[in-house]
Image (cartoon, rainbow, N blue to C red; front, top):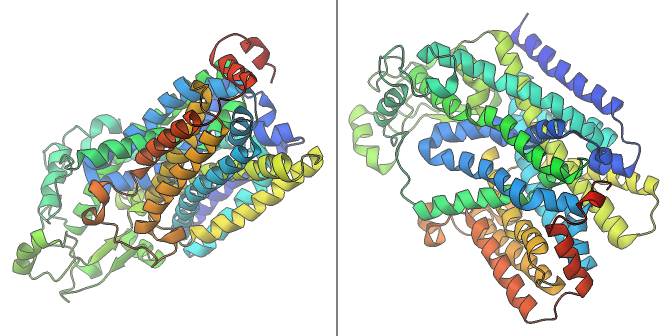
Length: 588
């Protein structure tokens, strides 16, 4: 069977499973659609959270980012994982005890204001829509290679599949679909990693193989990687980070952004009891760790495999001839995600860092610029091909990459549609809408959101992990502080909460748009997104932590200058924070 046929079998088979599950778990009520009926087991929920969380950014882009940036990109792992600790300790059990369907509904009731609920809807939509751009872009990358179509066609196929199982099943269908998707993506990620680790180091455990000896050279694998990339002008893979302030702020942004992401938070509303919310977070960390412990090894080995493909003798002296490039390069060139330009017309591929610091060495070798442009989002997907693994492994990782992108996209789309139908339409525009009408509104709003997300996914403002990091910054600056103040402060009132959310969101979006383009439209950026232009060395990806401080400061200042919340609201905060009344919450 051809590789295309194998890919179709794995991808088509997994899609069929997802759609059958959606039909089996079809939502029949708004409670089914929003919170899966509220009866999901913590282990099942933890696995669904894992799939919801391990998006295209985690599966496709994170290892590619680490491969390109080395040790410095480990902040992604620390920030994303640390966020679940915050969720388990500070948010999940209290929000579950409150017993609502959505994040804006909690904010609207806690701050006794329809306007607060409306602002929360805006923050949720902006953060979630930014996040889903990255997922759709990742799905397009995967489809363009494994189904041998262009990325736009891939996006359309992904949108159709998401439409079928998300609109049909709602949260109930998505939950059980995500359990299946987790199984697919974790198998797809770990099996190729085991093969490649065995191939390069002889160790079947990738996380340990990362610190093992490279079989061909007899050197520690990280030393070998450092040697070959420094030979062509790149920094050492294990080099430390110079800008510690930016690193700390970026890690903090990812942590509090994780804890403020609405599509993750709503998963804690699906369990029967308050205690189950904590257990769900714990199980989610276990399931996520299986991938996150493997990702650094996959990244390092992918980078080494790429470099030894271009420089077969292990040094920069003799790059490979373009006519002798391996088949995997030819296949990915068709997608446009690998591009070669023979700048010095010597018929060989020069892959190097053409920064000024390496210019003299490049001139001495007769090199006229880096000739190979490799989209970093392809490294995980291409790794099995680079390592000449069997065709079924390539088909498996195709199914896994698509499962990762689609599972998170579905969760995000549900969060957006729930905010529109439940919080905007039912909460503000038409409070008397019937349950049937609300369910129809939710499905229509999800369909419209899918169309918008598909369009934006065709023109993303960066590679998948970067776009996702921007979404985390927006959630960190707008929703997380408001949720924290809503749970732990009796003094913050509706005026303060609204002012805090608006200021945090406006500050963060403005900083991001200055460097990434207004509304992410290409060509509209005011400044180049380079460290030299960043204010105090803070990148747009790290600004969410500062935006959160702005939110907290404005909210407390405005609240202290205005009236205290009503007594019943202060008592509500007490009842959410402390154990009394927890038994009743189990029935929500």
